[in-house]
Length: 349
Image 1: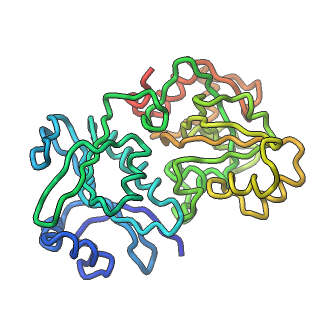
Image 2: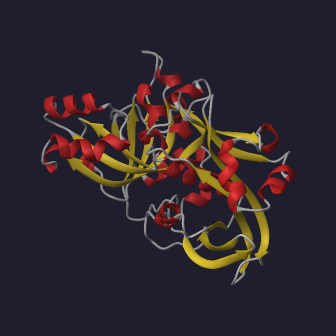
Image 3: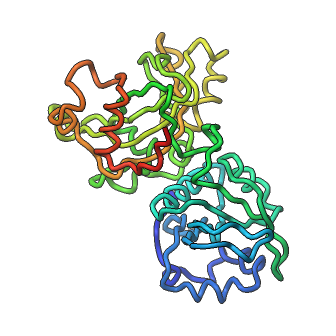
């Protein structure tokens, strides 16, 4: 059974579930707080038998005065309660992406979360994506550190600024991906007619960092380049209406076969973030003379999936050159993002 990240309400969960025992032990008021939120929404991670994660997100406007020093007045997204049982599947990264997606959806200018210092791996995860320790919060349960992330002030570091997209001085690309790999690699870009069962609780689905492997000349791309993923048709002869652009990613690095010492080196780099099985990866390394690997961050799913037909009919893209790995102009990129209803705040230059 695969775990799924889904939206539900507190009233549909049981406070007696063993999953909540550690939260009740760590926060004296947790049970009363939980019951008071009965009709509010939260995200949970579960399968058909077990609850293994929860994320409660809430917009707050104004100063945050119950921490020291107080946080300045702005539109905040508060990560009210967060618990994850990761099981080695990089579920934490999927949760981080959901936090950012929610922050943009709710128009937040900043995000904050309180965490006890004992949860050092969780703190490290937040800090990797630009969160900083800026305050403390002391209650009868003890003292927590307060991590904040501005969504208005950027550092210039691509990872710490995630999911913002810097376009100045970069190249832009359209990159094709087959339907059988698309949603496993890019779960938030699932199509409306696809089954949610496709989105499994595995590393390559959960991670923010994706590895794309191909015989294409991916080395044409450079770190910082912007990539638009193009999901090819699932029915031969129907590409005009069934091929769609779905996602925007940023290149972190590109490697070729000769950059890996051996197949084990190749596996250690690709396996956690690729949709291919170990056997498939070994076979590709053994049989492909031309083999390129692009590591990318998964920055945003399009809110509207724009078809190949619309892009052609509106004069945004021509039929040729091929749409497998194709350079785009800034104008084409802008039109594609606009058609895909990507949040304009994500594009910072």
